[in-house]
Length: 396
Ligand SMILES: *Cc1c(COP(=O)(O)O)cnc(C)c1O
Image (cartoon, rainbow, N blue to C red; front, side, top):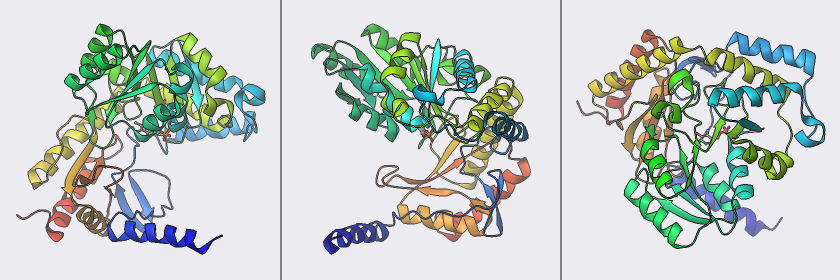
């Protein structure tokens, strides 16, 4: 390998370090839960997407174990060659029923689902209009399609309408609006009723990525469209967050859309089938989630308590109603220092900074879950106040 190449790579790594943007990974030695061990140190975990606390749920573990016994470990095949078991179709049917769609199709991850969606469905004569804060996987998926690209400022409905007009005036055949249901760095909800109304007015489709909503937002946790009482035309989502937290993604929508994706979606055709353990645990997760009003109530009670506690302590929060509660620090070094001090005080959170959020928008993103107790939250609030004073984030 030429030395010059590795020198350039090292220079880039050096810049990441000096900008305070270098990310390190901590080694957790226990299952994902409200309290985890990191190097023998027990910490309260406030940065997992484990909204309903199912990541270490015994019923999911039992379903996964049973499926390994009766369906084996791996599929060693893509779905269309010899990788489709009865379990895969059961989960796809269950997801579709749960989400009130005609069918669904599984992927290895939602990153793949978003990478798969646009290219087979839209051609060069079509247009995609994408919210500026959409998840990286939507942005990449749109890049992989030949559709004309339009972008609107985050949740700005005036701008969305301007882009719809531009796409129509540009002669687009089909127009698809793509949005996260919940913007994961801010914890804000997409304005789906307005988006749906504009889509109908301009004869456009609506695609919603509901990764940070499925399982806990809306009736039965059916997500942001159910929360607002509107219909999305296609939905994408993950098994890697509230639905057990392992991995796996899906697209749900009308039958012909799902049928065409099974024929043409590249991450489906050229990537391995999900293992039976994961699929069976996904079915077990839906069994729980459909009846989990108690868990959802606890989750939102926890979110309200946490939000109020941080506000009282003097932190600057982004407003919202979602269990993602970002504490704004604006500066990457401060976010790192605050996360490090909190870790010493027994609270595990992660600083978020460029490129995950825009420069100057660094923050600590805290996330609530249904398994956290009041004692956990009060201990964590005391640690936040202490760390805030120790790092100079709080001045009182
Ligand atoms: C987490 C997330 C993804 C990726 O999901 P995976 O299943 O982990 O690949 C995609 N979109 C959004 C909005 C997400 O939050």
